Length: 227
Image (tube, rainbow, N blue to C red; front, top):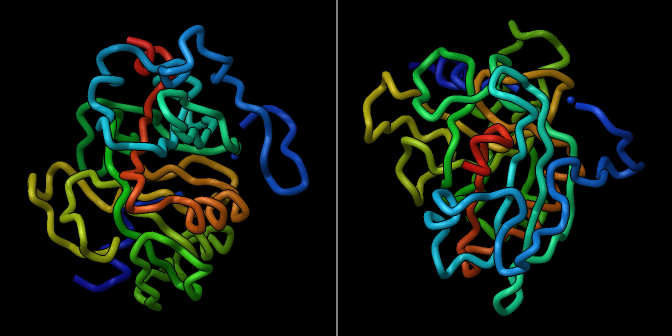
């Protein structure tokens, strides 16, 4: 398949008033009663966060069928998870699902590691392995508003081989389970399954997420996260 055909698997923003750098307070992330827990994340998903993880991006979806979300970076210091930054975000245009399928336009819910990055633009100082390639460019048949979606991407380790570029085509669980689920630049509306953030947010995450901190993303609608 061509690079353009591959990239159509991932498409590409929500209430509240963002600041000048795109950051805003997290709607779904009120302080937890227990600071050793990620706010709004229940026992089931919390148990899936590796003990070694010291960085977690929690994506709080507004609803099962909503494309609006909030992405919050938490950093663990000792036993305490501290809120570091938050940004408005978008997820799949049809919402969320714990059983993602290719073409369903929903983002997969769950806990996933973050291990590789890349994009059309030069490495902004990423700590994760970064692959720069024109092959990431969105097809010019897409709306112009989407052309820069993949200037920066961070691969969400869903149905992919860790340690490879984000656009590696291998699908360990099969093609029907979809793939190319990324964090990438926002274009102002829902995606085909990825999670999108403002450019400032992507730059910050690329410069901050550290392989030695075993970063993860915990993502889904708020009620699913709490369950």
